[in-house]
Image: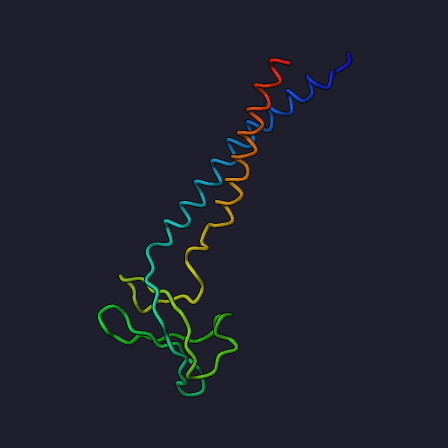
Length: 133
């Protein structure tokens, strides 16, 4: 039994539609939830300081309290005491900070999800067009 090119294209468009829409939607939702779970972060400026034999990051929270943590992140590896660095902290836990942008949390999952959703929509439109050929 021979399969014609249009039949094969129709089958492939159905598979790509299902895979693209279902997996794309799941990945996009997971990416959004990863971003939402990480919580709200406040950006501020901090300074690298020497505290004994180690270097630390010191920053002020919204109440004016000073917090510090070890300067052991990738972004602070090359910095010397006195250098400024951008940090993000949570308002509920200002003693914890991060030196990388929290907007990047789940961005890869969201991007892959959107690409798969786009492929699913295009394959769905192609499947509808193929029905009339």
